[in-house]
Image 1 (cartoon, rainbow, N blue to C red):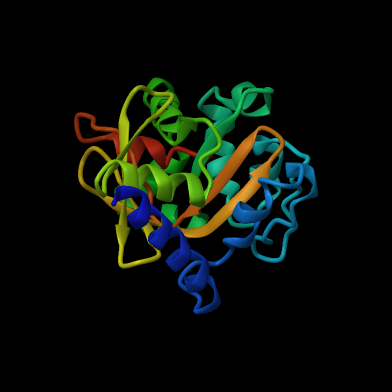
Image 2: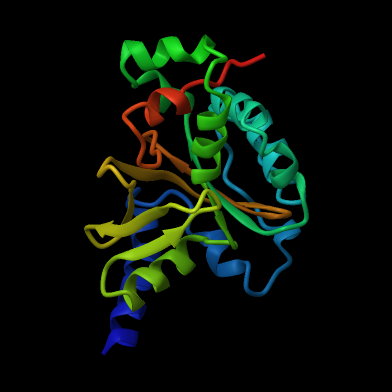
Length: 215
C-alpha cells in the first residue's frame, strides 16, 4: 500500500507542475536517463543556472540569492559547496531574508557571530542529491514526515501541504515552501525556499542566519 501511495504522490506532483503548483518537476524525471550536465535547469530571475557548475558558483550568480551567497562564504562552507561531494542546499531568497524582523535585518551588517553563522549555513545543507522525486519518496516511506539530517547535525522535517507542495519545517516549527524545485548542480541540487529556516538556538539563530554582509 505504501508503494501505491508514493506512486500516487509522484504522479500528482508531475501533474501539478502544469497547474503551477510545482514549477519544475521535469528535470527530476529526466535525470534518471540523462547526465545531470545535460539537464535543462529552471532559470532564477532570468539567470541561467548551469548544471555543470557547482552549488556555490550557481548560488553566487543567482540574482535572488545575493545574501545567501555572501552568508555561505562568510560562514565557511564555500569550499564544501565547491567540492566533489553531493549535497542539497535549501536556499532562502533575498526576499526571505528581507522578511525577517528589523532586528534580524540589522544583523546583515553585524560580523560578531561567525560561529553561529557557520552553524546556520550548515543547517541549510543536507548530504545527498534530494530532488523532488527523492523527497516525495522519503515522505511517503516515512508515513508523511521525512526527517532530513543536515550537515550541521540538526533536522529539517519535510512534509506535503496538499497533493503537490513540499513543505520544510525547522527545529523551531518555522515553515518554508519550496518555491523553485530541482536546480541541478555538478555536486548536488538547490531547492529554492521562500522563508528562512534555522536550527534550534538560544533565540538568535534567525538573526545570525541574516548576517550575510560580512567582511
